[in-house]
Length: 453
Image (cartoon, rainbow, N blue to C red; front, side, top):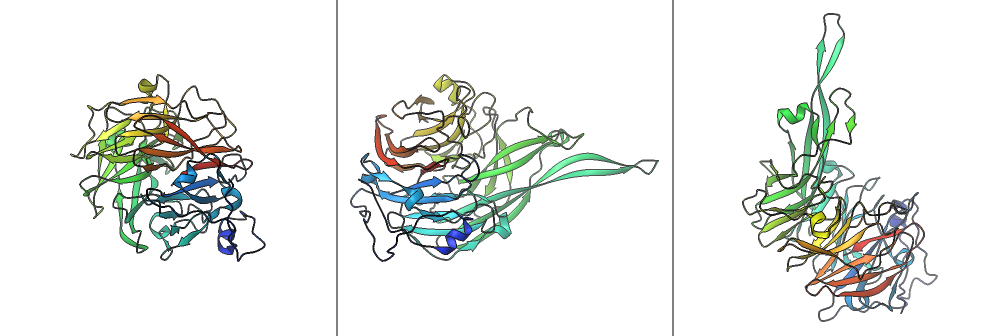
């Protein structure tokens, strides 16, 4: 069964996506085959697709979304064509999407370009129909045109962050009146803003300098990127993931090969966004900012957080109710899966502590867009994981830009499609491990799917 929808012309979205086009129906007054509205236990499942810009898999040609009910999402006879029929989400590059837990609302903050930093909200109405809700606001004056953000657990608030860095040097005048610049440190300034997602307005904006120890700063270490704010169970602390970087103090050039420090997280009072502190893991040694997907989740009163670029392979780390890393909790994906150099690309737990993990590793082949990705079913309670083998894998299955999973009870929805090839929605029952092959995802050349919401 193919789902076809009225293709509405929208000049604004065509302009802001820099020429990204979606074909239009000759008759704009008739909707051909309406998507059945979810009933009973059903819900909307919104598929997100990233069109190629200049290179396969870059996702820089714009983002399109298309929604079906969960029954159709599970039906392999259904064919979904978001690249032909989808709603164009305003964003110069790949949109940064979030959704409400019930699937009825999509939130977006445009990334980069003239519309970068614009927040918009949509009611999901099926197919390509996403109705703008509330007003559009720009948070670019606070966190720039390429902010990193997440929807917090209260479902009403978003938090967006950005880091600006500045090298501090000491101008020492020698006896020959020759200035000899001596590197002192790199200052990292955190900008953070909270957004009322319902009223479309800025709530609180703060800026903080984030110094490290004098010893680390003298070696050239600094905080280079932050992302993925998450609220603790008590609702009084906000955690922000950190990417550590290092430059050469002699040349001021950035170094790519340096000793990884213990994984770090910034802790702020919430909702005031005051009193920044830094906590450090003795278990993990890698970044905690993630990339495109939410990287930390609350479960049973604690925060579970993935790290990336760990020399011992990605870990899932635990931050306890005392707002400190619980170093007695050790969950190493290398050990759990029997692989080397595991790198968690995206992940999402269900309420039972079972999680889907998207990852790559040292054995991943190089595909058309990057290293091949895989999915595993992990258990936060036991620190174990197993590769999901009932999902097909292809060298061009690229998950680095993956953003969204849908959790519906103990089931987790995900997308599988190699770059430029068709694929499917898959639904994993996290209790039994059973995998259901769902609707077909129709792809186009060089493009890929970045998840469901």
